[in-house]
Image 1 (cartoon, one colour):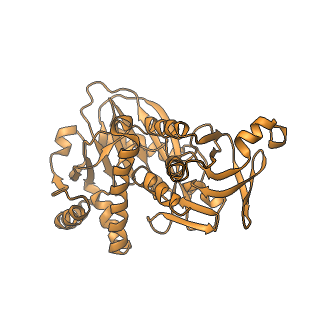
Image 2 (cartoon, helix red, strand yellow; image 1 turned 45 degrees about the vertical axis):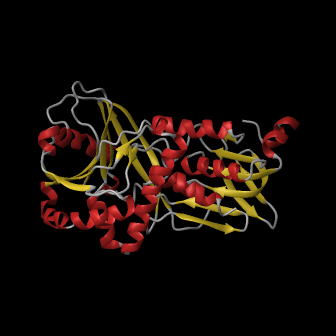
Image 3 (tube, helix red, strand yellow; image 1 turned 90 degrees about the vertical axis):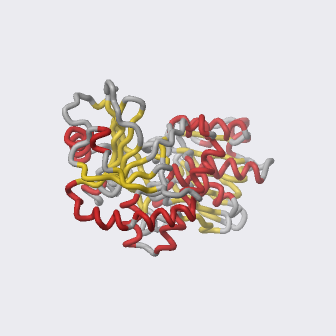
Length: 377
């Protein structure tokens, strides 16, 4: 690959000179930031750079859940975090999902609101009375955010409906759904190009130095400058900034088509550490990070035997027992997490901003975080 010094006059002038806003990361946050900056500054030169030939983090590698909070996850968050922080984060997720729909369009997202189920098994049967006792409270809080009544309800018939095994009960969230993240990110790319935003792939930002009126940026092809730098790399952000954000790998599998698959919707298992859904007549299943938190705190895009074996076991013993299947796809994506699930949106220098730490909820909040980041400039 040619370095900057080897480019022609035309190439340098068109792509790498007089950059008003350089955005690092061609994911949900990066595209959203660029689109809003272009609307705010129609004549600005905006360039998005991405290290991979596709988004490298989680934007097109996630499970495609349009979710904002399962019952057990929220109750666990409330046990560990301030109540106002929990519900303000949920509100941001809800607003973000609606904002994403307005930007991309429900048809481009292939949005299906089939509801979600938070599964409680025999293993955590002791928690069921507590969860039941909190359903009214959860509904009151969610109604204040969404305006919708009775969002959460207990569903005792889940096992019978979908033939799951070892399920004691489940808590349904009727407002959650699923999307096609591949089509979503492609539509983001199309919108950026339509607006005159430049997008270059295969460029890795290695470091930067902010001065009074410009940012010197060291990329894998040499050095360039921009008036402003916006870092939207989420789980990879720790390579460029010193903030409370670290990578969290998520591993996912998708089965071969399963004839007469009855399962439809999204499902959270083991406090959300596992999650699965249908993709047409296939099953997508991911999770298992809790098996090895230390090992999964990595930017390595690899699957591991430990997690793959646990996903297969869950398929065979709980989700589709006595049903033949094969695994046709498997991959890993990198999320950004920290000591809290609230995202970080701020300026770290007068001309350097960050929008990171989606906390595993990038689909829900990414587009809104991009908008908030653009408003800082």
